[in-house]
Length: 329
Image 1 (cartoon, rainbow, N blue to C red):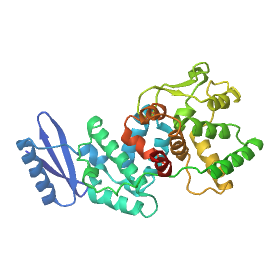
Image 2 (cartoon, rainbow, N blue to C red):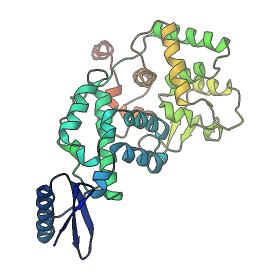
Image 3 (cartoon, rainbow, N blue to C red):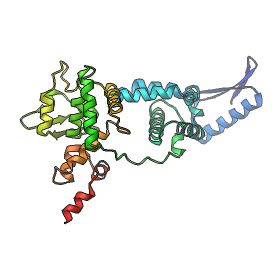
Image 4 (cartoon, rainbow, N blue to C red):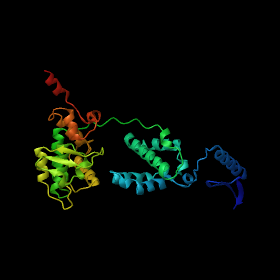
C-alpha cells in the first residue's frame, strides 16, 4: 500500500514493494499523489513498471559529460568528438531531464539547428544523441525510450564531388610555400603534397610514424585506419622524396602537427590562394581521381585508398567521360 504524507506544504507519495527500490514523488495536490501511486502499483502488479527516477533526476548535459569522461577517450576521433559534445552541452536542450527529452523536443532542436548549420551537421548531432542515449540506457540505468528513433532526419546531403584543378593546385602550393617561408608551419606544404600523392586520410597521415615507412619496398604501413583495419599504402617515387626531404621529429611522427592546426592553416592557405569551397578532405577526392589513370582497375585503386567496397570508392572517383570516349575510338 502506498503512503501519502504532507511535507512542507507538498504531498509526497511513496510506494514500497519487496524486491523493488522505494519509489517516491512529490506533488502540489494530494489527489495527484494518490493517482500517481495507484498507477505505479498497477504497473508493478502487471510487471510493466519501469523505474525512471534516475532519468527524472538526470539532465541530458550530465549524461553527455559522463559520456565524454567514460566513452569518448577510447574513440579514434576523441578530440573532435569532445569538442562537438561540449558545444552541445551549451545548448538549451542539454538542460532538459532525460525524461523530458521527447521526440518533439528533438525535432525542435533539429529545426532550429537547420537554420544555421548544414543537414550533414544536424544528422551527425542526432547520431551523437542516439548513441549517447542508447549507451545510457544500457549502462547507466536511464530507463527511457530513445526519442531520436521517432524523429525524421534531414535528407542526407549529396556526396561532395569537389576536386582541385591543376591551376588551383599551383595556387594552393604557392600559398603554402609562403606560409612555410614565414616559418609559421613547415609541415603543411609537404602534408598537402603527400595527401595528393597517396590519397591517405588526414588522420592516417598524422598518425604515421617513421617506423611505419619502408623506403626499400616503397610502402607505408597504416596500423589503424578509419574502417578499423590495417593496410599497406604503396608510395610513388615522388611520395618517397617528400618523406626524405622532411626533417625528423623527436617524437617519431612523420607529420608532428595536430588536426586543428592543419584545419586552421589549410583554411588560411585556401583563402590566400582564392580557392573557394575546398576542404582538406577534398585532397583525397582529387588524389583518387588522379590515380584512376595510373592503375589497372578499381581493385588496385581500392587497395591504395583503403575503401572496403567499390560503391564507397565510386563516391570518391570522378571519371573523365571524355577520356572514356577516346578509349572507345
